[in-house]
Amino acid sequence: MVVEEAVWTWERALPLKYVLVSEEWDGELIVWARCAEVDGLFVESAPRRERLTLVGCAPTGRLLKAAERARHRCGEPVDLGALGLIVDFPVPGADPEGDPYYAYDDDHWELLTPVVIGSTPSTVDTSLFDLVVEAEVDGPVWRGEPADAEWRLFNGGGGGSLGECRRVEGLYGDRPFPASPPMRLIGCEPGERLLRRLVRPRGDSDRVTLLAVDRTGRVMRHQEHMPLRVVASRPSALGGALVDLWLAEGPAVRPVPTVRSVWDAWFEGPPTEPGAWAALPSEGRAEWAAFAAARQDAGRLLPDPVRRLDGRHVTDVPRPWPVCHSCR
Image 1: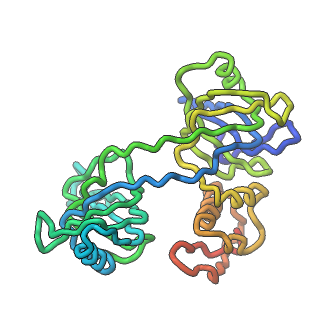
Image 2: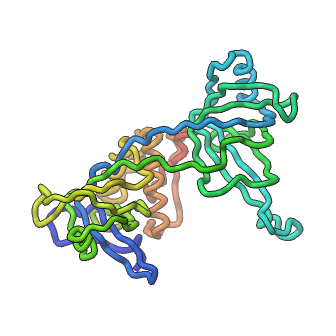
């Protein structure tokens, strides 16, 4: 069974909102629990700032202006705005004389809310800069630093070029995930496997997928590879032999509280009012687009091939989501 195409139900008056599932090595689907609600799914992400050194940097545009200001401010931070970084490198073992599309690869990084805290003539070439930058870093986790790479800087959000550098110290390497806060599953109907684990707890934890379903039981979104480590259980105030479960941790990546209204709207089914997303903040618009993309991936769009886009609310870089009158 394809999880995203399933219709999930239970024989209760309460609406079903979440399902915990996992897949065995042979493809067997395990249903761990059905739940009425989750507490702790929407949390503010704690920013994790890191210090990077842009070595041998030839900046242009606003990055050059920031480098020059930082050089004369003696360590006083200079705001940059978001930066994008693309690292191009040859694929080890690939034949560059063959298909060039497969001979090269690239990593994409986002440096969010960066500030320049140091600017000096570069140690590799005094005509260039070494820039010390603090930022929230978003990019690949498991790859080591590639060899023979080209490092190119851009305006954040896919803007124009801001120059190049020889490498970025501190970008690659071990970047542990921050500790994931706990979460509570409210009004749960445990499956057989979870019932056995509650009777005989184990030290380890299974990895499960948290499915969020709409009122019809169709999957809206999913959070994968969540550890199912139950630290407490109680009879639920919702009654009906349901239980509340306290988990040691929830998904590593979670939606922020400001997008809860988007989840509530899509729980009732795909919105039918054109432009209902327009008044949302940038986080809400991005979340709305993610719901629409998930529905498109599931193949549940209306059959009309014509899409009429209303671009009146496309007003800046964080708001690139024109409403589609056919898919709302």
